Length: 293
Ligand SMILES: [Fe+2]
Image (cartoon, rainbow, N blue to C red; front, side, top):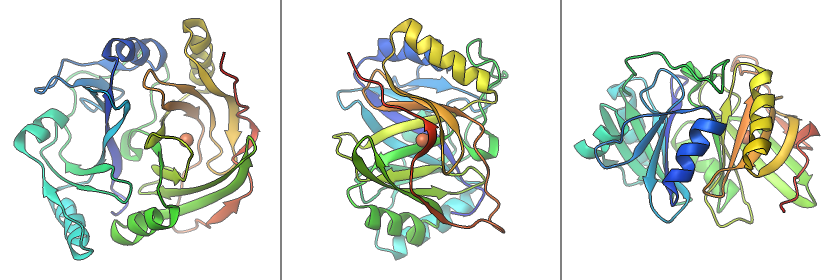
């Protein structure tokens, strides 16, 4: 996809919009925008007019993953690559573009039946983003909104598709035992963010395992961790540091049952000197599982 691409937006189907409103604002420190033309609820975290779109529905899982490209020519180039690989690429409707706040989009289904969108021209907000809860702000910009880890049917097929067809770049692998289960995870990047897309074959029914938001200060990680406990948001893993991206983070459960990760301090990638490694563990310290009551 080239290094100008970024994880631009994430569409989620949620059954409890009210719980999400509170969670997004009080826990993650996101701002809620006015409903989109189809009723979807947009969430803001930076200069983009929206980064999350919440669609009411029963799935409580990812609805689509939006990759933002630099311009229409970049979008067309990726669409041609997909076409040559035999992937059916569809043009988004004017309404779909209006809902996402982009100038144009194409979409297709990846090997995990996740709807993937390629878009350009994302709308910027009129006013700067300020969060009472995440005072340091989110680290986004050219690194995109964060990363997602999805549940792959096949790591090999998903890796082949994203690297060979879409041009994502390999970052590294984790081959570890986590909480008594083997974990084989693949990490890919499209810009200096260590990974914008990760995947593993997980024993869970959902396609989305977690979405990660990175903040500019470790204090906002700690304060968010405290808020979860104060507000009764279930935690999944305690604060810890990952071996591969070196991010300090914790995990909790969203109102939809998939996880979120709030992190700080990840290292960046310089493709001229990056060496792909295989890590024997997910975390250097911490990230201990939290038993659910
Ligand atoms: Fe993560």
